[in-house]
Amino acid sequence: MTLKDLCKLIDGRAVCGADRLDEGVKYGFASDLMSDVLTLKSDDFVLITGLANIQAIRTAEMSNVSYMVICRGKTVTEDMLELAEENDMVVIASPFSLFKCAGLLWQAGLKELY
Image 1 (cartoon, helix red, strand yellow):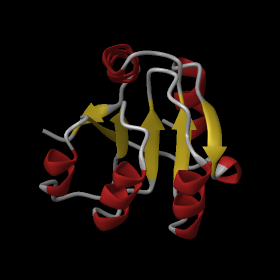
Image 2 (cartoon, rainbow, N blue to C red):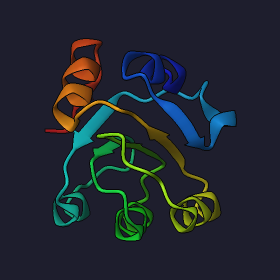
Image 3 (cartoon, one colour):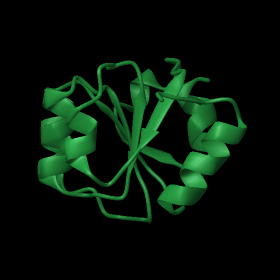
Image 4 (cartoon, rainbow, N blue to C red):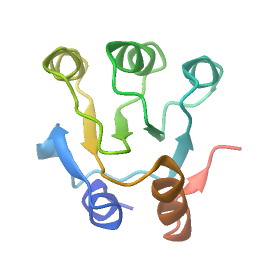
């Protein structure tokens, strides 16, 4: 699915990387535990999380994650945006819960990593 389609499904808004919404993604991983993200062997997925802090962006950076969804209507800070832009990430904000975002995206065909 394209990131544009993903945004429509979760009422998302690109807060960083809006010019890349035509890119596609096949896999998703939902977690608030950044230690779990660090164990993943793939970088071809969207990270769906409720964490809105600089550590989440740093973890994505270390794991070569290009796409992130920040759930629960959390505010993405300027520091987060600056670091995401430096790392050429797409960050999408959604008002929905982590559970709802993951469920809607899975139902629409996004595959789980494992």
